[in-house]
Structures are given as C-alpha cells and as structure tokens.
Image (tube, rainbow, N blue to C red; front, side, top):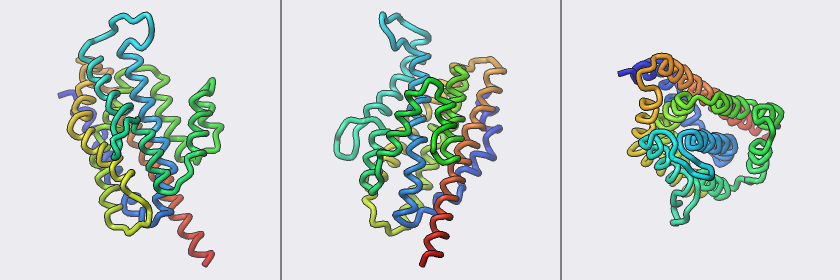
Length: 264
C-alpha cells in the first residue's frame, strides 16, 4: 500500500505529538484559557482546509455543472455536512468553530479578540501577509502560515493529506489525551461544552471522517508516486507545525506560572 509511505514518513513526528507534555500541563482554569485562546485558530483553519477541498472537488458556483469524481464529491460533502452544521450538546445546529467559541465563553474567555483577528485575516487581500503582520502569538502565526501556504499551493492531494494526516487521523488520539489530562484536574470552569466538542470529534473522526479522509487521499494520489511523495512530505509538515503550536502554548502556560509565582 502506498499509504504506508505516509505512515512511515510521519511515524516519529506523530508519536512525538501524541506524547506532548501540553496534555498534562493544563491544570488550572488559566491554563485552559491559554490553551483555548490559541487553539481556536487551529479550529478555524481546519474549516478553511475543508472548504478549500470542497471548492476544488465540487461545483460551488452558479450556474452549476457536475464537477470531478462523484465519489470524491460525496466524501467531501459528507464531511462538510457534519463540520459545518453539527448539533451541539443542547441540540442546536452550528459549525464546530461556533461550537468552540461557545465553549470559550463557558470557560470565561472573551471571544472578541479571536473573532476580530480571524475577520481581518479572512478579509485581507494577501492572507499570508495578514497573518505575518498580525499581533497573534508567534506559535499561532506559524501554524496559520503553514496551513494557508498549503492551501495556496492549490494541490488537492497535498491539502487532503494535511487535512487527513495532520487533522482527521490524529484528532481522536490527540483529543483523548487532552481529555485524559483534563479529567485529572479540578477546574472551576464549566467543562461540559469543551468536553462535548472533544468527544464529538473523537466520535466523528474515529468512526466516519477519518476513514473517509484516508479514502480521499488515496483517490487523489492514485498510482502517481510523485503525488504520494508530496502527500507524505506535507503530512509531516502539518504535524511539525502542530508541535510548534503546542510548544508555544506550553511555553505560555509555564511563563504565566512563573510570573504568577514571583508575584506572590
């Protein structure tokens, strides 16, 4: 199986990510706020990866005409359906991005800043320049820059690989580690919304979206060795970018603890 090329390429960096120290570092309400305040950008650019694939693999304009492979259209549209219009813990329809914003509010985090930053970046003439010129933390900037660089290259197999091996394939195990870490804390924060968000992704990505995304990569790469090589390289790039994001969040948590301790 050519997919083994990707699995071999990402094995070490994937294991490094799944054993990241961040998962057990979230011990206080402030730690959780710092994590969510950066992680929201990963939730947003995930949707951008997803929609870029939908735009490329299906017809999203009028007049409508059939476009591409019907099986690919089915796979991406099925994933979009749940990611963009899922049901929250109260039975309300919303995207997972909006679900995460609501979880931030429940955790006592103002969402004004991330919404404003995302609005500015999303409406910029040059999105990479807008990311670089933003006042976002360095670890968030590099993560967004990596994602949108992949999107701007416009290679469907690369975008699908970053989406699959950097997100869908990884999320069930990664979010399980985060939930395990949270279960060992005694936070005052209302954890129900963020716990539901993590649990929902573990369920969807493990049972449905992960296998569908794997099939999508295989269909886009077919028997083209160059495409498989590029898919493997971009998968590793996406995982390394996530490690840098988590390193930055962990550094923020540790810095805040140090500053808090010295102020006592």
